[in-house]
Image (cartoon, rainbow, N blue to C red):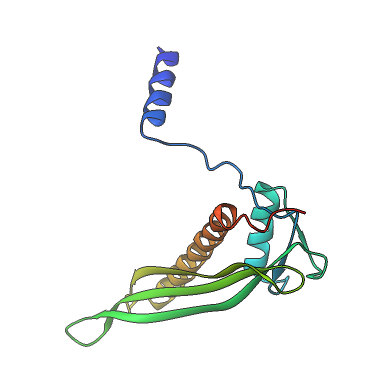
Length: 164
């Protein structure tokens, strides 16, 4: 009975198209991340690249086959709705991230690409600390999503910059 249940669950997962993410394949052996090494984003990208690809993150851009260059990384918080009393009830959190990939000589391997993430957040002025904690959690989730999108784009991106 237990085996039958496991088999049915496995078949239902396969039927719905579920599959594990697997590993990525980047077209470079070495990659330089053009951001502060002590930043949380640097740590997330480095961890994700080294855990799921054969690419190594190095600290010298002149020795890297490719450099990840951040052109813009902005966060915004806009009011979406107000209560009848004129108090904020809902915010929209936005992160705009623009990057490009270049080789050691500065030649563009992948042209500037933009990722825009948006999340809505309810706000209760009676629970300011809870709202601040929720915003931090949402921003952290957005950054994780951003890192995953970057890796997917790099792995499916321009293959003209292949390994030499």
